[in-house]
Length: 446
Ligand SMILES: Cc1ncc(COP(=O)(O)O)c(C=O)c1O
Image 1: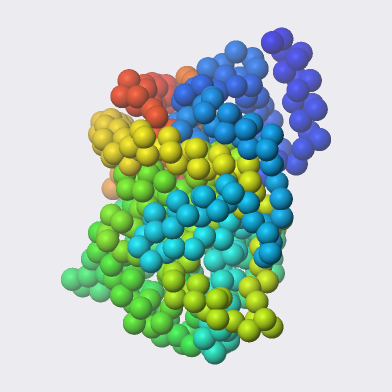
Image 2: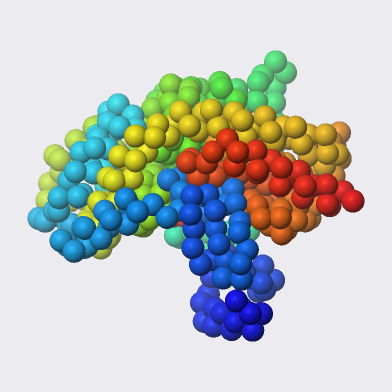
């Protein structure tokens, strides 16, 4: 494609307002034409190893004919029908049945959405619904963590603990409280002597509950591994303590597994690493590997019971046109089959170990402050000084650009470069990520 053609596409593209848009970050966008496996092909002939699996979601890789066929077959038969109370369809029945108890024992009911933000809003509303049904309508607040990303619908925006998502969209929605995240590299909370980061971060939760009054709090929400906030892997003692605190104070625990779900971290769902179970699970993204927009929440049997026994005047009046979309659910079912056949959690465990070891070899660069990960979800934190750990987002952006010009897609999240490749990635392709990133780092050093 000529330079002129590219310029034309980019000019036409100005008719779109892109997500998280600023003219500076969209001056010379990649125009992607097709994908195959872990590889993306642009209209101007670039071939890029997608180290992010799109937006942490294309777990089965690009160009999967089985998924295209599943969509085609279902669309021919029935693409869509209302799934509102009084009607249902076969793919949504089959997928809900398949998912029943799949992630966590006791989470047997699914409410479908079209994506992660809708899932989290559904989780917040369902928590409110539950407490109203329990005769405690004063429980409506949600505790989240600083650095959390829960999406951009209005509620999810203010559950998100990243300032830049709030700046132009205030005033803030009432009732979201943010506490420090269990970040082992740079914990922002206060630590008492003898405490671990996990204990201090869990104590911050209990203190917030006591300060706000448990009778006003509906839920605590957390990503098992924080994604957009910089790929923060929590210490092992954190989530077991969180679970105990939520139970002790009668607060629902919402696990936002929009990124960590469906094998990414080496377990089907990430809280399994710590033998912990949530009351509500949010999922999206990899349920279809990005081949169709689909998400959902799963709720505990105790929550389901409050819906089943409600008076008509207290019906669960929530749901979206596309909740239980027939084609999206058919794709989800086929994708689950592919993920099970290829043992995705096991792949994420072994290939993730290889990726993490490779990335750790880059610690010899003076600006690589920390390298961390769980399964095929890794982060490389860039600092200007390893002693003071001063964050260097400008250097992270330079490395990101140098990597992109070498055919490697990562994502700069503040001063952390994220890696979350498709789970079908091969050992050679994992090594290629490390090689290209190393070359990019060499180039900015020179
Ligand atoms: C942890 C988490 N929750 C929620 C969302 C929002 O999902 P969506 O963009 O599908 O609304 C994301 C998106 O990246 C996410 O990473």
